[in-house]
Image 1 (cartoon, helix red, strand yellow):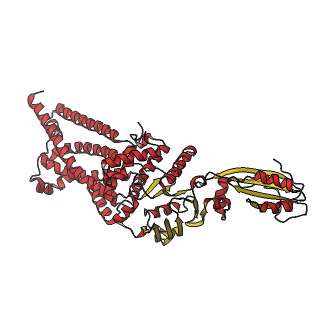
Image 2: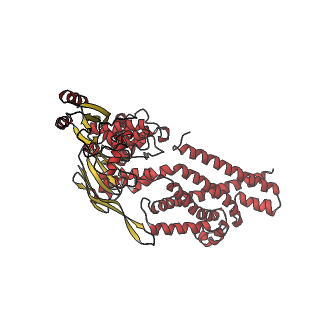
Image 3: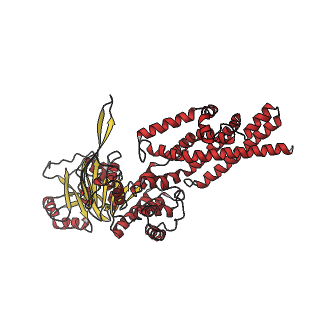
Length: 356
Length: 220
């Protein structure tokens, strides 16, 4: 369990006129990360996520607040004790930060050398971990001879060499193309499962959160503005920045053809059609529900939008339907009793037809 | 060419090698640690220390701004203290080394400064001590630039060693002045100059080869 408690990081900045001012890179940030989970922190550049992840292994020392890894308060550690604690926390970076004058093998061996392991131990461990991340055929290559994805695999192997409990990922896929990003994320999820490793990652790409994270925190101007299980945050975002981020990967926005419609929140007339957004998870599908509606009630159902997304491999479908006919109130009632998330978007007059 | 002349040139060559070799060795021995201290004590480096950095930096700047010919004369008392005399090859080594130390310090500092800060941060995240960061990360990463800087230092010293002839330091420069200039023997002047040029070419060639062999941060 990792707990960040009321952490603030204040930088002194020179303001115009020569006065010293305070800049809050982090403002009273608290969060906790369950053992074995993947926790994502997302925010725009300059939001403070980079400072936050560096506060976990004390590369940045918080101005106030505490950082607990299990029961150790990292902020109390110094010198040798801090270095020992850091050896149990692996870290990977956007720009890989491999030693250019060492081969992949000797890069992976580096943290083991620092840990004063014997040559024989180091050799066995390097080969074992290289096989795990799929880089065992490139061990004699220098970083300049490797592709971005291969470099990050070496970075991951290096971070895992000392069998850490925690892996910190600082925008680890941001310098990689989409295909390579996917394979590196799959690797991270794989080692999370295989080794029971807790992963804290920061990113500005919502895709990364969607693909592998269990929990997510949204950070803006140094503050956590929203936090929770990925499923909840994605399906029910609260803050506008979160909605924006979710919309960037989920297509939950209404299509443009809806934009200039004046459907109303209040029912304008008795005969108005109702527009519903249905959301469903996992193996529950929307189609049988609609079939049942049409059979059981005196309604017609028009599907306007339908698509399926995946959050951590779990199907998440969104359907927007238009229900017309005399039985629509009863139909709505019955839908609300099903295991679907139903949201009334509004009402439109019967003459409305979708175009375009 | 007479036997005497050949011997003269051979001696001159050996003396030049001796002066450059001895002063380079001393300059690297003191200049490298100086460069390391400069680079790690610089603001925002591994062990920032503003007063130390400021003082050393000032000393280095002073050392580098004094022209060699003046330095050579100015430190004669110091030279006498160290080697017991102010004339001869050994006496020339002292000002050569003194002039090269701040140069090596700056060359080493700038080579170390070029290292990507992310690499040092990565080493810190792995629990490396400042000493391990210097020895296992900074120096190896800076090695190609260090070799290039060392080549530059040696070539500078070859040039300066020719001036050391002015205090009877011996070497090819001394021969060029005494025979070529003072005894009007332009052939000797030419031969010594050609030998110096060849020497510089050779060191540059070897330095470039060595630096390239140590460099792994780019393809090819």
